[in-house]
Image (cartoon, rainbow, N blue to C red; front, side):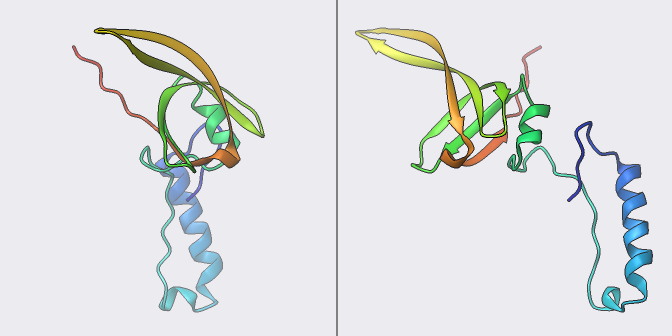
Length: 122
């Protein structure tokens, strides 16, 4: 998997694949192994802080190490943590009261974070 801050193109994947194939050809490795170069898809978890930076403004689906599921809009990211605006729904009697809260997660708290693809109704 390859990536860069502005995103990676199919042409760049092909270029790197050809380069690596040329470099590995003499080793004989490609006779018994297959080389595949690609970019992380939307379904892949975010791994490094720069991936979070690129996705500010997107909805995230977060699973913390305690097994809890969180959803919200990514507002900020630093090298140690990221901030998500979550909608909290509390029931008071028969009413549902929605509030928004910015929650800061240390990367060490997070088991998995993925971009949540949202399709809007037309």
